[in-house]
Amino acid sequence: MRRATILLLTLAAIASAQTPVETARTYRQAHEVEILQQFAELLRIPNVARDTVNIQRNADYVAAEFAKRGVKTQLLSSYGAPPLVFGELNVPGATRTLGIYAHYDGQPVDPSQWLQSPWEPTLWTARHDEGGHAIEFPEPGEKVDPEWRLYARSAGDDKAPIVALLAALDAFNQKGIKPTANLKFLFDGEEEAGSPHLGAYLTTHRDKFADVDVWLFCDGPVHQSRKPQLLFGARGDAHMDVTIYGANRPLHSGHYGNWAPVPAMELAQLLASMKDQNGKVIIEEFYDSVAPLGDEERAALAKMPNYEDELKTELGLAWTEGQGETLPERLLLPALTVRGLSSGHTGALATNIIPNTATAALDVRLVKGNDPEKMLDLVERHIRQRGFHVVPEDPDEETRQQHPKIAKVTRSRGYPAARTEMSLPIAKDIAAAMTEAAGEEVLLVPTMGGSLPLYLFTDLLGKPVLLLPIANHDNNQHAENESLRLANLWYGVDAFAAVMAME
Ligand SMILES: [Zn+2]
Image 1 (cartoon, rainbow, N blue to C red):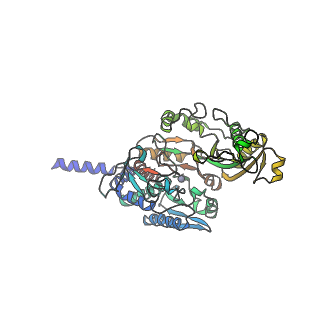
Image 2 (image 1 turned 30 degrees about the vertical axis):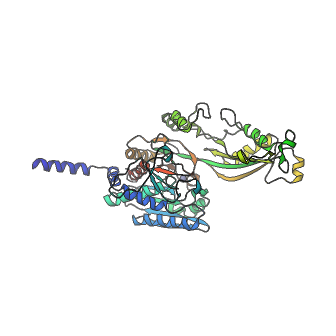
Image 3 (image 1 turned 30 degrees about the horizontal axis):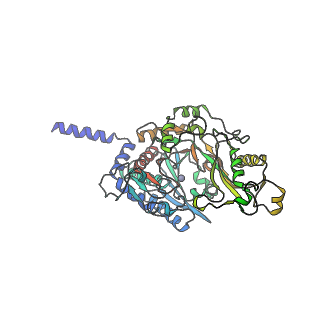
């Protein structure tokens, strides 16, 4: 009897000694099926930014779910823009305020490429191309395998963090855990369309965000090795299309081949002149404005796991650009890539002509220090240096006869990179909380390769930004058959609970 009492007391002591993260994890483990059901419910609402009716439904759903959990929510709206879901949870006595950003919109879809409707969430035992098969959703109480995957548009990018946050709040409410910081939530409805109104929203409502100490961007993937990571920045992005002209109509390749200029060939030569055999951009001054790295950044790079060989094997690559520099190192330099190329047709559609135009879509990824316009200016100057007369629209006959080589250059508005100093004190607390949640050391990474409009927060609001991604790297984001590995969703719930309750 006495022994039993002691045992019970000991068990009670162990139970009460659970940290908030452990308590939240225990709650999550007992409610995985319910969390999945909620996730599927949100994923069933189509979320392409220009689909105004469904975008509104997404915003209403997200706002209502946060409101149910005690968050004071509000839809901020602006004419012609999807609503921004804003929420706040004030904690008496809290000394700091965390801003949390995610987006509820997703990339457009081509349903013909999907295994099932992009808006009908389906559970698979593994990736479809790695031996997985579709299964029924489990019933409450049934076991959930963390290697299962949920297929749907935005499963990874970027509805997973929204659902993980809701689950973490449920754990807090059910188990009586109090966040240690005030929380401000912001859910964007047009991130995949380039967040064209976010700057105006932030400016109009800047008072709401004045007390935020740090913004956490919950978007993007964890490391390819599946290790959790905290990132301190993201690259910027700028686009340019280049069209090269030949004759004013397509010509017979037999009657004119060897005499008429071939735009595709000229474009290939122009593109080849922009980059050397090792992937170094040889456009003048391309690397000149790159902001130098500090000691902390260099130390973080040195601590990154050596994952190059695994990644090359996974991707079927025998070489990579940059002569042995690692992926994290290469992401700290601006990149020039070809997003698309077109001139005539290939395969069964190919015809014996000299197509009279050739177009390349270029992507310039930017790092801290690069100005988007100036970087595109450098590319355009290079095109001129190669002897092209640059025009903003299709050339008229007079222009064609005056200039042997003509390139039409059209640009889209880009935005700059942003990078927070790695010595930021609160970042150390966040990293420690994430490490506790994950049960392994979180990787500290100077920048993400992809682009997010972090500059609005760093430059416009003057606040530091960190990225806390949860999705698996092989989630097919932006492509067909996007899928979230459930272990990543569980990590997300645990990590958000840990950060919201960090000391
Ligand atoms: Zn995203």
